[in-house]
Amino acid sequence: MEYDELIQLQPKKHGPMEPLVPLEPLPFARLDPHRVRRALYRSAPVTSDDLLAAINALLLERLDDLLLTPMRVLELSRRPGLCTTRLQRRLPKASIVSMGLVPPHAPLAPRLRMPWQRYPAALAGDCNRLPFPNDHFDLILSDMMLHWTSTPVTALQEMRRVIKPGGPLLLCTLGENTLDELKQCLTKMDQACFGRTWVRIPEFPTLHRLGDLLAGAGFSRPVADRDLIRPLFADTATLLAEMRRMGASNAHRQRPPGLMGKGYPEALATLYQQQFGGADGSIPVTVEILFGHAWKATPSRVTPPHTSSCEK
Image 1 (spheres, rainbow, N blue to C red):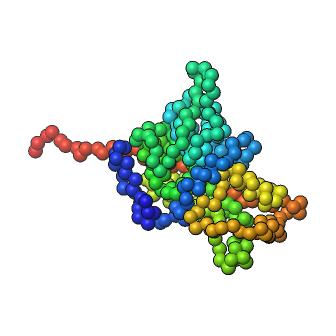
Image 2: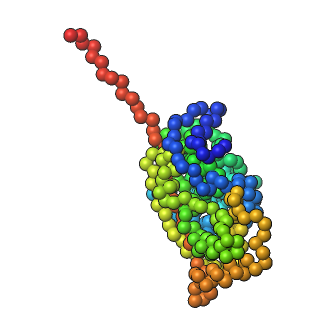
Image 3: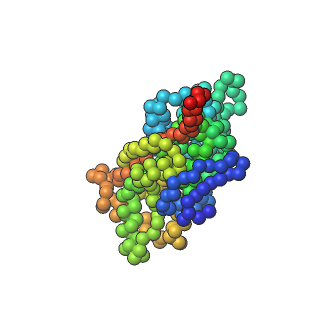
């Protein structure tokens, strides 16, 4: 499916959808989904000390502000795991379905459990074609998934389709300033080594762009805000190893071909340290997290015209 035209996802088995607002093509529409899934398959389980766990905690704090008691919840994530378990503890009476781009590392429910205990149901699938009927969930959470999908507008349209009228969507994704230091160093390295720049880090959306995506997908009352996190790492080797552990990779179709050479990692580490390194030798990393929430509008009731039974 090309991104040059307005994407109108019309699943036959789920009925028609409303006309949507056309949007400009997005840079991360050129991601290779096969490379994304391959990197996520190699990712390690999320622990309570991970950056992804901290981002999930910020997302769940915003869930508390909505003051909801949903009974059916859909969580869309890169890979079901610790964050899904947290959501179930926060909503103990809700029936939660967690769908990731790849399957979880381990089953989310134990083999032996009490009949009254609820555990999330986990599955892997394509967020551009959700296997659920229309108006099925009271709430949808999208946890660090949207920036890894090739067609985010289509994914948002599908989320809107399966939410009940009046239900909210709450999401978080990476913003344009994420890995800005690493991006600057890679650009200088490519210019020095190759005389041109390669796409090495996906171009994540801006805060305003996220609001446009939500409105263009047909959601009402979209609200977007952001947080900046600046963790410290010992060196670039530690940073890149942590990124691989979380499943991050260059999945862009225009990635550089071949290997970079033996001296490239050492030169990159030296440049990063010179440009951004601290007095203790550590290097900072900017992580911009965009948060958004919007609602599926309730169909307006059309009041029939008043007719009088009196005749003149």
